[in-house]
Image 1: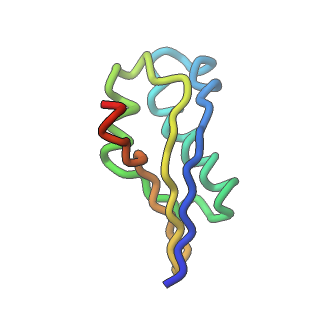
Image 2: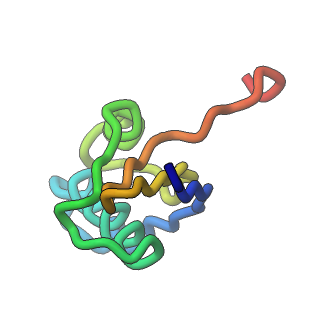
Length: 92
């Protein structure tokens, strides 16, 4: 099993250009587009983890984070799983 794993910092600048009531949705779309570009997969092969989705929506629809660090794992069948990277206990 040959998996490719990367930690990627994704800037979410374009979310501030979206209408206030669509910013969190736009942030998810930006994450998906960035992963598609860097991991070279089509849109239907990107799977976003529930914890990452909750992290984006944590501060509501109008105020998503301006950048986020994610872990992307590409499997043999072309599926890419995007999740939050494991943080070290010292940072918490």
